[in-house]
Structure formats: C-alpha cells, structure tokens
Image 1 (cartoon, helix red, strand yellow):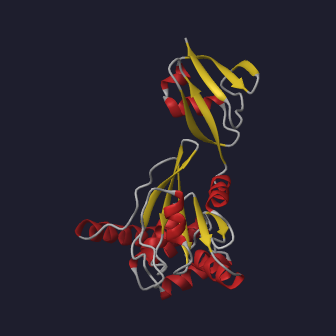
Image 2: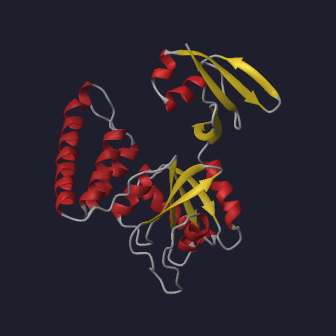
Image 3: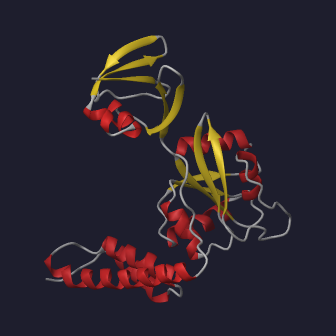
Length: 266
C-alpha cells in the first residue's frame, strides 16, 4: 500500500533537508510526523521518522545539560511571546505592561536573549516573553509552545515577513497583530487578553475572593478541579453569584466572565 502523504509533508521534508541546526531538524521532523498518514502502508516510514526524532531529541537534551539553557519556564495563567523586527517597540511594550526592565535603545538588536515579565490583568498573571529579532530556532521553539504570539509591526510589508517567519517555523499559536506606534499600552493589554479566550471567575470563601482564569464556557466542574481534585468527589453544590442573582448550581453548569463561585462540600 502506498504511503501517499499530503503536500504539507513534502514541504516539511524539504525544510528538513535544508535545515542546519538540530532544533530546526526536530521541528521539521515533528511536522513530517504530524502529516504522515496513519495506515498499514505507512507504519515503517512513520517508525523511521519517530526513531530519527527520538535520536535528535536525545542529542539535544545531552547538549542542554552540558551547556546554557535557552528555554523559558512557563509561569502564570498564560504565556504570550512578543515578536518583531529590531526597534519595533517590543522592549518598550514589555516595560509598559510588566515590571521587567529590558534595555531600550535606538541602535538595533538591543535584545540578545529572551526577556521575561509578568503582566497583571485584574489579578490574572500573564507571562510575556520578548524574543530577540534574530529569530533563532531555539527562540522560535518558545513561540511554538506559547498560548499566543503578539506580532509587533509598523506596516504591511513587515507584517507579511513576520507571518512568513511564523509559518516557516510551524508556529500555530494564536497571533495578535500590534502596531506599537498607533496603539497605546492599555489597548494592547486588552488585545492580548482577548486573544487568550479566557474569562475571570472568582472563588469565594469566608475570608476573601480570588480571581481564576478559565477557558470561556468552562463548567463548575472544571472550576472545582482547578482548586483541588477531591472537590469533585465531595461536591454537594455551588452557590453562584452573578450580578444581582444568587443561584444554586451543579457541576455541569456553564460559568460566565465575572461569576463568583462558592463551593459546598458533603
């Protein structure tokens, strides 16, 4: 039986053959595996790809243990990468939205390594990662696993070039287009939040209320699981405060942004 992979597989294969670094080869192999058909005729080819990928990843781990680690540990409720050409305003934006103090200068390539800051959105913590404008494969791998990528650009030509870089690096994270010259920091902050498709629900106890970020349309069950897994097993009911209404609801009830939830156990 012929394998017959789609065109996307061959695109990734060509990029693999041209790849110079281990990181680039890993990314291309993952994409090839993603597009390889799953049937009896493809089993051998798929196994060979997975074996090659495992070998490269093992070599990468060995190298990282002996050298400098570039990856960024995810913290907070979501991670967003700031990406743009040199002097696009990435560092300015990071300093405006977080407590980070990156170098901001007129000369190019001020940022030589990823800079990290934490953005506060009504008590929800969003990690912002400014990526260097060199677009090295190890930095692109951070964007690949981020919840969103904010593309900072001043014109259509730059925008198209940056979107091509994302495409060529197989980055599928949700993309936000930002013009730091025309949009102020507070407006950009709202754009970043909306791109994450999250809502804020508040936990209510006798002592205080605390904000929690959840995917839009999450249920009471998902809310309770975030607090503690035993809350599902011992759940009795939830008292829900929504504007001027107070309701008693069960685990399957869908929450809305701004809801206040008080859990009651058996």
